[in-house]
Length: 224
Image: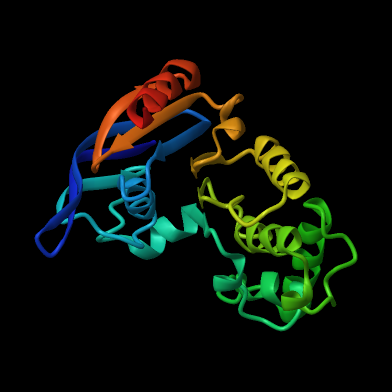
């Protein structure tokens, strides 16, 4: 369970998140809202990329502010731009890099990386230069670099923004098949048909929290 209790966050005098109370237990949860609504800030609190200035966040009972390393073992994070996550020359090396603290041998890390790539649409790409992959392939690589750690939660911050329609569909279908709890930040409302819950943020506050249809109906009214 992911729990936000009285959570707020300020950048100087500006409040970007205020008075958020949520308990996220569903398998597929989405955060939606206009630009600047606080949804990405809230999502980044789940693995401690951003810390609350008010209240507390708990992930399976762990506080990212105090137990950041333990939380990051349980929570994977995929950014909008995969280039910000790719750090190694080849796809296989990039995924294996995630396992550097696992205690596995170099050979075992490479084998595991190749296996995860094959399982998620990049079979045969272990030796391929990572930055020469297509946009969709790079996003799959960033996802594989998280999944190789077998986290319990996967947070995706607008992961389809830079993808064309085909790769967007492919990435979305892959998320649907994962065992992990997925928290998705998105502007693409078409992705949310199969989700369990949608949380709508406006001006840093939760203004709707429901199943997709009623939550998105509220969100569309805000945009009118």
